[in-house]
Image (tube, rainbow, N blue to C red; front, side, top):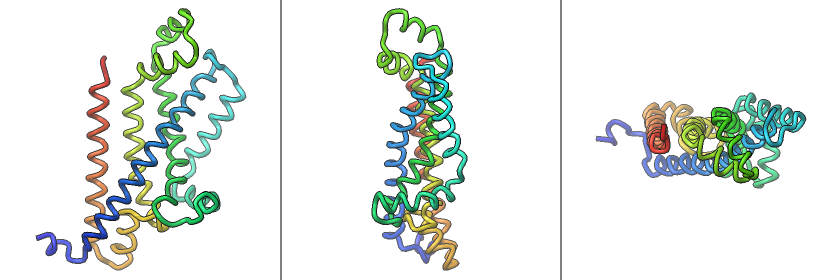
Length: 222
């Protein structure tokens, strides 16, 4: 049945491309979560009336975030080619796509982290400060727990965007379903290959969204 509907699909290649897409998404999402969280914490704590209030640091950090967040991903990949080649020695393959994926998504998630922290009740933060809580305690015992649903929802949105980024990265030889759809599907006029790659990308997106929504619902105590 599947061979009839998708006669040009080589399934072992399709499954390898699916694995490559999942690998790129999982690794880049994990690193993005850590970097984005750290940058978001810095943005929040250096903003006016906060513990580390510093206009210069806040402005510079915010400007860098806005710059990298505004560059179209396909252009960012090209701009980072020298850095990627210096770092990994190659610009092809799944690992070569990771620097661009992380640099492209971490600033985006950092903004979502900042928004999540701004929604935390200021009274809770002030109460913790009045009881002598240090900065580390406020971050890990107040900010992150109070904004956990928004943080999880934000990283879910970011992970979904990263699936799309991996497809674009595939066009320049990063591997994955995007690469397969472009080289084996589009360039060779094999519509069934493109269709199956698209279906698998949609399945990955739906699974990520379902996992994120489930965890968000369980952590939201409101």
